[in-house]
Picture 1 (cartoon, rainbow, N blue to C red):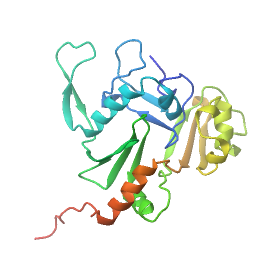
Picture 2 (cartoon, one colour; picture 1 turned 90 degrees about the vertical axis):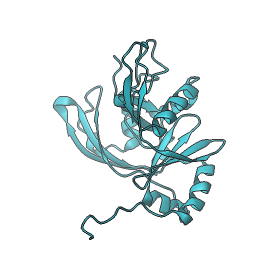
Picture 3 (cartoon, rainbow, N blue to C red; picture 1 turned 120 degrees about the vertical axis):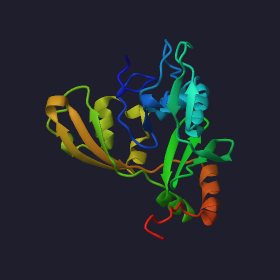
Picture 4 (cartoon, helix red, strand yellow; picture 1 turned 30 degrees about the vertical axis):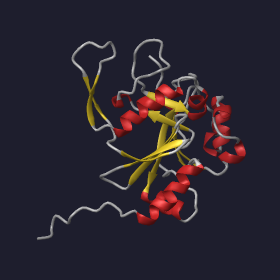
Length: 233
């Protein structure tokens, strides 16, 4: 079984970095076009590997179907009954361009931009406001736990993001160092017995121009999702 912490396409270490490497969780039941046997994707993908793959179109169709779906039944891996139940994101497509699709949640202020070459970007209401103001959207600085393949030594707390990627041997799968400098990387903790690195990174999201232009206009008319006050009479 492939290591979920490695890129499911190239097999190299794949520390998540929004806009450049993301995780596909197994419970989404997205078929793995890179597996030699029928299976569902469960692990990380370098976006550079995804865009270079001849199977990116298959992934795009499967992934966007999941984004649109609510609860749906899909065939099992071998086609035998019973069917499987997939829980998708239940989002609505609001834009289709030559480079990407844009989806919107109907229950929260959330959006997703999916390039036709495969990569995807999650957006919040704050991102929409930034796009409207001509600023670049950024990912939240969530803490990411990532198991390292070998002991890094005592200096890991002082590394920057390019040094981490170089240590892992995957610097060429991510953006060049001058672009990585725009990502705000922070070392959080390292647990040596498990070689477990905790880090946080706030990274710019490289949306296609057509998505930025659409969302900039869309933001002018957008009304945030609200719910009735349960305490109101």
